Image (cartoon, rainbow, N blue to C red; front, side, top):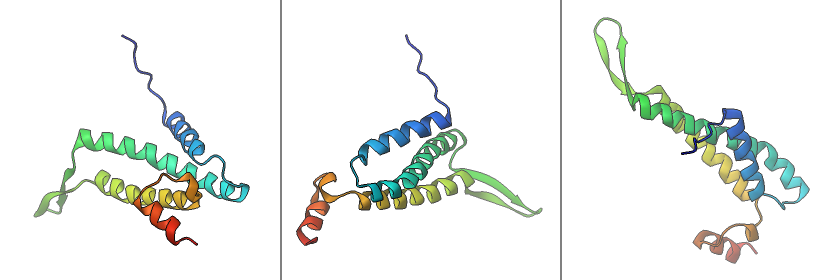
Length: 120
């Protein structure tokens, strides 16, 4: 049985960058220049989220804390907090990327049909 190759974080980020660049290939030069940095940020966040999810699956969603002698309890894991923040940031970056794509490049859905109808 062949073993699955394990890629480094940099290799995974580069793979994700290539994947996203294929999606946005064909944009005009100005939009392509803008998307370059957004694609790099999105790729890094996507790969980082995968790593954080694995860590959360291993360590759990909560962690115990101790503040002084009498105050202790269970709180949301700091990894979960990071995951939530990064997910929001990734959604924002992806929305920016999608907004840069021409309407004809986007898949037809109810929202895109609505945009096309009222874009003129």
